[in-house]
Length: 261
Image (cartoon, rainbow, N blue to C red; front, side, top):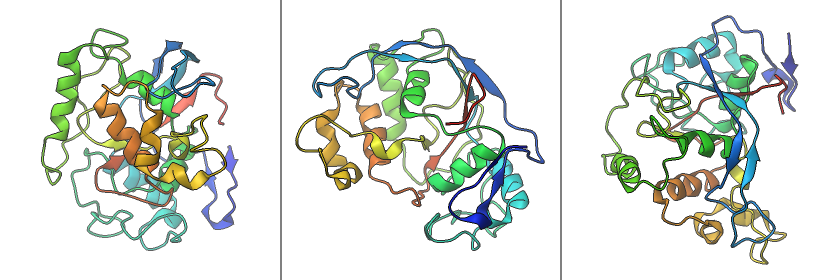
């Protein structure tokens, strides 16, 4: 049994869970050009090598998160310290052990801390931004469909839907890697969400508070035609780890070597 011992001993999380872990699919590695600069020059995107990893085929559902909080009562609504979950944490649930939406719908209103703890409970972690972006660039047949205007428009059409639309169940069409619902259902936490706008120019050096604001980081985006990606980056970088929103869920990842970061 592997346990992670965070600064708060009461919230010890162990990787031996009492429920079956979600289905993970293998995502092969490859060279990838991110929408964010990866090289020493903030205006130039340098392709990076993505190591092979595993990713949950679907976002974590209400039923799965309910099983988690049953087994880890410190993560139930009303018991989690405010330092690790804000007042909106699981706000849509009818009661601490009663989700307010369908069991198969993705869980939302979950903080980064809670999402990270869930992933650790099944021997996994949150994906990095590069891993998520790499997997999300694929469509049903192509590993990288980002230059296809029709594919981009299909993704953008999701943003036109009213925000109060009830969330559908997970299980949409799989992309080439076998991953589902990366677009069109919920936003998703990534492990390094608060470091997405680090740039090499003087406007971000030595001031970590600038990472918290969308406008401060927009200058770092290379592919500004990828509006959907830009919106995700802007949202994530505006959040604190204890924040939660009604359209933000998560999925877990695993390194191929099985080691957690």
